[in-house]
Image 1 (cartoon, helix red, strand yellow):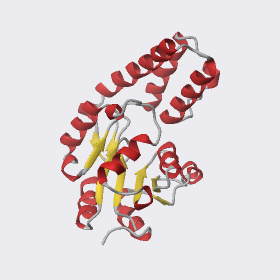
Image 2 (cartoon, rainbow, N blue to C red):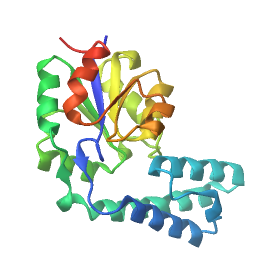
Image 3 (cartoon, rainbow, N blue to C red):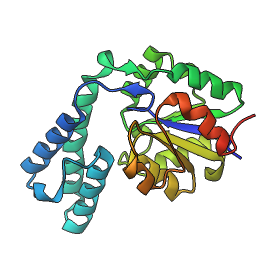
Length: 224
């Protein structure tokens, strides 16, 4: 039975202005300055996948811990500069407030996992009126390891007091869906199209918008 719903923030509850490809380009430029072969990365990767590739390369490179730290500091600097630029221009995904209110009425716990920094995450939640629905929020820097993985989801589930199999992730990111499935969570992917990547990542259900979420959770056995 589903007792809790975890949401991804960017693209799922909040539309992020600007260009994510531009952010990836900035990260690639930073990596090029550090001497990384750009052929190892692809602009087609989503951001978590790009960072996973970077982590794999760094592990295999034999770098010193000091050099590894320098790499991640440069990457985080690029990400933080991008995040600062989006706060005032971000907008709410249509139907977000309504669906969160419905899930609360059904007795479901609600959590948020964000790979944006905590100042940006908290600011966006408050400005959009989303904070009042959240039982827990786990931002990128709430854990010592800020790199994308399932650890942030596990922390949110611990806060909510539910087991992974009692929770569902809602996200438009294939990487986030894969992290959820790695820890035996259910996952619902949001996509306006066919959702091939989300399906390959293991999504249990695909929906076209938040308007379809409540019914999809019911199909998985969630709420009253």
